[in-house]
Length: 344
Ligand SMILES: *Cc1c(COP(=O)(O)O)cnc(C)c1O
Image (cartoon, rainbow, N blue to C red; front, side, top):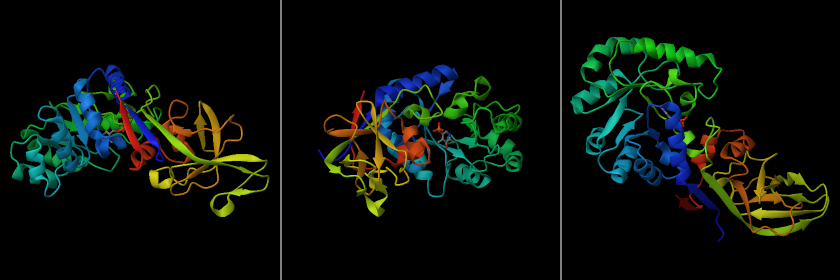
């Protein structure tokens, strides 16, 4: 087999969901946007639903329609982008709950689908989605009269527990929802780990389910094994890869493995990146190319048939650090050429 194997541990996803629910002690939804962060929203959601998850969130109505087909009636599916123009049929047909982000969306929703369930998203300082406080105070009574199912907001700095923004956003959320008798939700994975003051009636973890930071105690979910195509010997002073970017400081054995930036292993992942073989680290040398990566395997005994990039010995976040990015981006970038297998 010449393509890399991406193994996704659905049992670990379920275990991570249960662990976060245990921490939160309130309803724990599952965020499965972007195809469950690249890990297959259908399979992930089916397993979580079987384990007891009753509420899911996606970014866009189209994702919600696909998810409803998978899950059938019953579980609730929230849509973070709210009610966009042209979405009414999808929202009604797939029984989605849009998280209304503005007065315009509110008007659109009650006009197109009067009585259809919806939530409200408030901006508490991130300035990305949700109603501004002034907008909210103008709309509040009208919106509440329509019986929203949820009022939510999103934390900007929850991966940093010491950041003063966390408490600031929480106070603002409290102020904006004072005296309101509607279930509330403020926290994704990061906020779930900030303590009970951040849990309200529901938490909405995403990345923690998939084994990513800031959930340090997560079980690893993803393993990426990449086959070695060939191994060559180079002498001191020979160079490897595009732009001669690596020069052998000693006689070396270089393994060329079958994945590259077209598979989401971004080119920025250069200096300092490693792969592993039976737990032993081996350095990536030279530039990452479209379909290939070169690795110095001089210190391994024998010729490995494959090397591992992500797994028990180095996490998605470790790989993200090699590339100067975050685990979320590595997960969602994992390409379509991999042979995907799911374990339960
Ligand atoms: C993506 C997202 C989440 C999940 O965030 P994680 O950091 O992956 O846990 C929750 N709520 C909103 C509004 C989001 O956009």
